[in-house]
Length: 496
Ligand code: AHR
Image 1 (tube, rainbow, N blue to C red):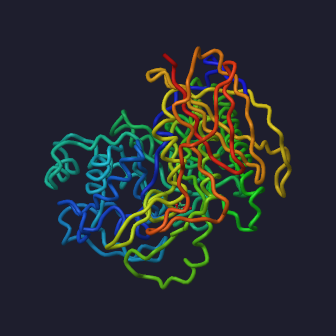
Image 2: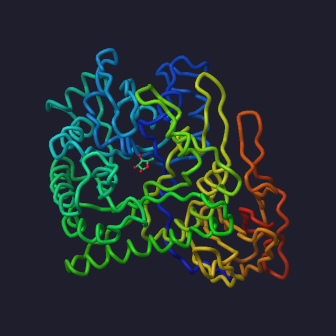
Image 3: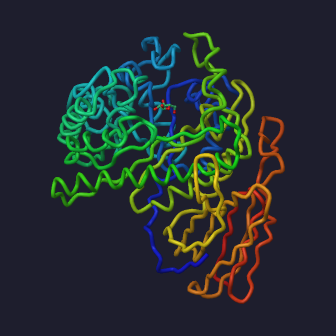
């Protein structure tokens, strides 16, 4: 691996380490909010959950959905809690009590140090509901909706900067699914009106629900033809699963993710050229993760209960390795990906799990997310990598070494995040670090396990990192020793 301080990809937008809370399953009720829990604060928020979210240093959190937003009446979630209606939540066949709504979410996100990324309903609703919600949230006062917010106890506007124009509107499962032309027109007009109400906001147009959608990437091209002038980002969503139990193939899925990102960038730039525009549309990868473990058990759940245990994937060691690789892929595209949200944050396909009324624990995927979010701030660097490769069922030329590199000028730290995809062999990586002057290793954190299916529970953390990585510096080269199938963080600092 060759590295140079000058091989700059981009300054990393911290929002690349974002996440997502949907009013779904036990993400909110029994997750972030549980007034009867022993750790609940005066607003009913679980402080044990807040502490772990704070550890992750999540900069931005998308809310309230997800599929849920496409039939959501935001007005149900404001005002005195005792007056809020219970509704059939049709996206996930549950009952929504609306005890948590916009204001509570803003309170919670502030308490965990994150900004909110708000989605508007473009499934059952449209321009009017969106502009009213924006006025309620962002207008200082003196108008119907802003005064109502103040009556509800929020004197100051929430100043929500980032807004999603609907969710996955190409999906047949989506309430109010639209064709690309229908969505493009509605999103453009909604965006136009929202920016009239508050020109400081940024808007995310819905991209495809995944790289496998039959309408991808035509959806991106057609919708952007309509929305280009009004939006700032286009969204990407992607989940992977190891349904065939083929680990080598599963770990290669970031080649698909990389191709997905490149195709969306190319499509954005094609429309830019077509429109002779000076403006560049960036990417918001606002749903990404592993999601497949809970699919069967979710089909067994009885409909119409409150906060059912939906999408409660129990993650394995191999999932954590793929998640580490997915973050590497995001960082390698940080010149265009400015926002990304691990979907989701608590209980629902999440790094943090809770028992309702009980304890809390870190899933396997918590660890790569935690280390990259905390130590992966600064400038993303390109590296020139020569790695042995393998072929798998769906991919050819898969490099065993997958990595991303971050230079933090302020702390004079160089951080290498590296995955060894080899299932049996250690990888010894020669890393040229000459251009950084004298560096010393601060720590080499390793996530490894002999059992690819090892999981974590409330009582047992089978998968957790250690700091006994064996890397060393020799002749001004870093020799990275990456154990078989492992995720690694090698952190270096200027030596005295
Ligand atoms: O994150 C779970 C679901 O996945 C979201 O509600 C939806 O947007 C996507 O299909």
